[in-house]
View 1: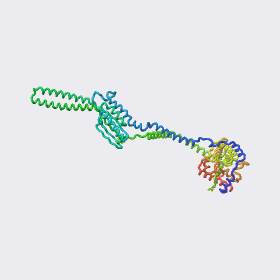
View 2 (view 1 turned 90 degrees about the horizontal axis):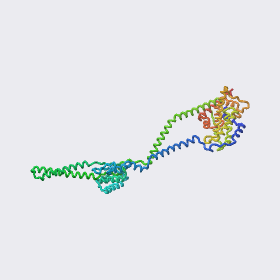
View 3 (view 1 turned 135 degrees about the horizontal axis):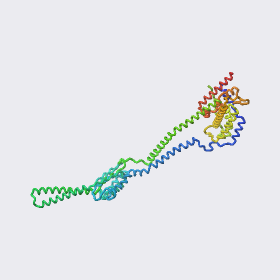
View 4 (view 1 turned 180 degrees about the vertical axis):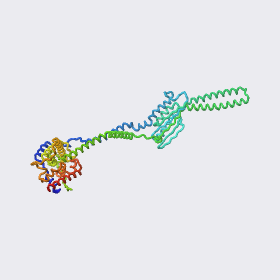
Length: 335
Length: 179
């Protein structure tokens, strides 16, 4: 018998189930059971189909939420904080340090002191630089001070540099009000004692005056020879010259102690070379990315820890499958 | 090499099918498959009933998107038959009986109606695995993919197994002719 004939005979003689079996199966299937699709089945594949995206979404949402919470206040607030946070706190304390008699004050009202302050203020743009410079000048005059020097540069990186002098009694108000012109970038106050210098000048001036008085008395006695008189008059002239210088020095020192010097720089962020503060969105994304990285690290750690167990389970499953397949082969060969 | 030309698998008509309709349509397929596998008509009848009982219990879990009802039923039939083979092997070992082929009894309808004596004997001489692949691919017209899924082997392995089984069957029949 050839192969086609063989196949034909095999197909033509297809076994038919006996009537008894057919009847038995008909009786069996009389009450129609419900079929799949009529109710929800939670298969592993469906579970994975839901669980994997849900876990990914949860990771993203948690990263976003943590990123948002860690990114802090709005960018503008942060900028203020970054620029004026510590410095803003120092403005009143600096002013307090200059308040005569205040606790912790660096100044002593009964002593002559040279007081200087250097302020750097940031404003938004060129127009604000001009306005702030003008306000500083007006403020200086209003406080009874005067402008030593002033320089204003306009443009994209605008800046103004002012040196003003204000009465020592108004320096506190001046610093507070100048600090309010913009955001404080830096602030420095120096106090130098001039009292010893002033005292020395006054002592020397008294001594010179006394010497002049003694020389004047001897010259008025009329008993001096011509040579001595000439010597004393020369000596008195030199002392009078020194006394004039001493008086100028004392006046200058006292003037120095009466007025405080304030150097003010007003500039835009570009002119100051300030590093731009990232927006809250940027910080949120950065924080979220950090959280995602950590989640990835944790997931990787869990995978590393569970990988050997998973491999064992897979190996056991494959081994069992192979065993069953061989057993089936053996059974099918034996029968 | 055999020139095996097989017809396309028959599509199941009703959709969605009821269990009764599926059982009615596929009863012969299941019975024929089990008869080829066991070469014992009484056992094939029992296993057929058992197969449909199991299928009825599992019918609510059957998902037509994952396979045809025929493949699903034949998988249950195969599992049922293998369970019986396992039990039979244990019983034989327990009773310390040498494995002997079941003699064909009087009145046994055979593996197929109208089979020649040579074909019947040659089929019986094949192993259950060889008869199984002939039943699935030739008698029941399952395609290679479906048969491969059912047997848990690759389609290539199915082709190889079928080729060997048919070669063996042909040689045995030729030998019988010579004898």
